[in-house]
Image 1 (cartoon, rainbow, N blue to C red):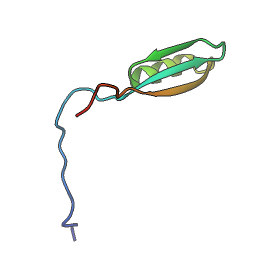
Image 2: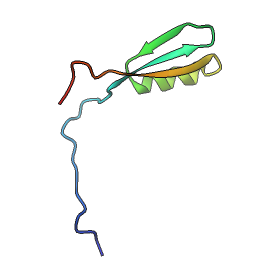
Image 3: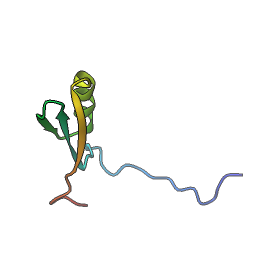
Image 4: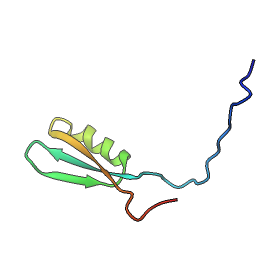
Length: 65
């Protein structure tokens, strides 16, 4: 039996959605801040042996729905 309370959602926008910035911190103390998760993934993959950690920065100031 199908759940009668199942809801269907649709996308209201085709724009990219990312409410965070990402700070990549290297073992030598330098850092780079990027605007989207895809860029973070690519950079981490390329330099993962040199990366110490990644900070997620909330980027919701002045934005909203």
